[in-house]
Length: 322
Image (cartoon, rainbow, N blue to C red):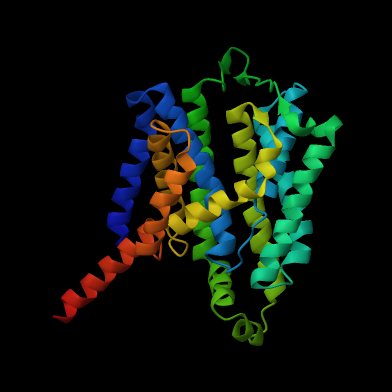
């Protein structure tokens, strides 16, 4: 996509912008960018499964919600450490992904999508019914956010700017880990499974094992996003597990580009900024959002970033041919 030197300069520029933004913009925009990064993590986790493994999950919100609920449950009971609460929420999401994935990865295409949707609806119903633990339809509210640090060195994680940098750390960590995953031999095998699983299986590769590993990694990072969102929103509610929440990373990924690593991030940015602009003018923003997104998907079939990069590559090839 880019030469190594150009990619390095672009990465450094992005890092400088990421660090400098909260000092330039106001609190509202800082919080908006924080939410974009959280949902970017969610979309990136989904795309490992969809864009690289070829599996469309309609129940990805289950792991997002489990990560959020476990983190929120611990913090409303005055758990002493936010990082440890996030870690336990992530572990819970990964364990749930192992169970769901064990049954789901045996199936293909629409059957896989329907089964994951079924699991997602089951967890959503559980969040509503298990009132003593989940708070029912009210969710878990009143999170206690202990300060980070030791002794006299204490950081208030409730500060929008401080939390922005905490989320930025997890966002960059997610980018780094998933980028290494998709560029590794493991990632190449996932793409081979996506393109032709029969031929890949013929080489002796255990398709189910690789699919399950991809599913668990994907669920783990969805749990990270869910835990961060619970801290950001100061609550965990059943809506985190709803199928409409599962649709958000699908939309962001398709909007940005499923077969481009940074596509889901671009999709998250476009989605939230379009939503932000529309909600300033009308309460029925979802209708207008749909009216904008439909032509975007039609005219950018590989996603905005994916289509632009494809056109750039084609123009470069034609220029060299001439």
